[in-house]
Length: 505
Image 1 (cartoon, rainbow, N blue to C red):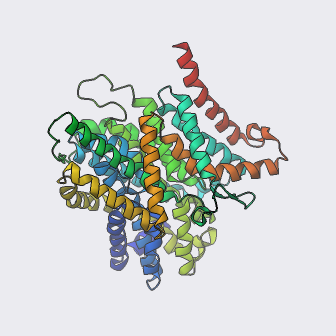
Image 2 (cartoon, rainbow, N blue to C red):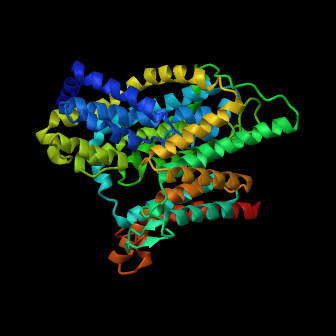
Image 3 (spheres, rainbow, N blue to C red):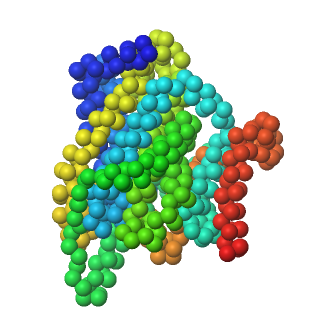
């Protein structure tokens, strides 16, 4: 308790708390710009911290890290263009709800879910950081491969019986992930002598295209249909109320708890990241709620504006932020790519993450932990101010003009990732492919997970087989790798159960 109070004492210094607040505001604004992911936002603000005292600089970084993931939900809901990768599933039910005139409700659910997930994760970090770090040590190459397989299998619950098309989508994603240098051999693959593809297809522009450009094509299709049917083009969307009824909050409470729990667990595992957490949380919520409210009057179907479809991924992605610091602060092992940037921020000020951080710089270490809790509390009012400022502009734009707005935002976001014009072509082609997949009723979720997990899957598989001398049964070894064996069996069940149920039906 004394060390926690020490962290609070360091944080409540006016310059430090001001830097934390500025970080939250900056992260919220930057996160709401499509194409600027949390990695870029964090990296942009590191140079500003060079001349600051350590506690002020790290408070700024914590604020940016927490708020960037939340800010991405704003454009995801309003124009179906995820501001950050962690909000890509929020765009499905969130934008569907906004199109029905309940944009304010969707945004409130997203912000509230993010804050609750972040607060729960911060409390877990505050109370159990040293103990939970031991869990991360149990994950080696074998367990990481099994975790990647489980992540790919998690989307089966969203396929509604169409497992074959889901498997095809996952294979497409894994194939695209193979473009560029092989992490095993070091030789380039599928680059076609294009220097822009040596390091693989740029992920951020591809994500912008898969969602943003594809959303633009959908909007153009809606306009064309309305004109073809000689119907009056619908008026701009209405914002609606930001107030959440108590009955809805009670209904979402189990989703917030389960989403936060999944985010905490995934966040502690090195290399897992936010995307795996949001897919697992979304899948878990889909299995529980996708059929519960269908057919009831006034209730939206899953994928068409269900509140649980917004609450689950948003609670999970913000739970990852604080929990990813558990292995970093306690062991010096980053939980994901953004938390890895914290190593650089600490190194700039002469600190090394790990057990010695708590003994040599205890006030800074505990200040960082406490700052995650306070940053999430700051995030609530800041988010609503940003929403009210941005939404009045966005929701007033007619559909025809919105096509141009989305196109400009997407191309700017794609170009900003490396300042390379090639990235804009990546976004456009990805958008065309995503729109074609939707017309063919091929799910996008497995393809995105294949893209994200492809390199981890390949490197973990190669290292595991090297260690086991080519023995594939190492993944089912209950004596030496029980965690891997359990995850592999669960993955097999996730694929087989829908097929068995469909055949029985």
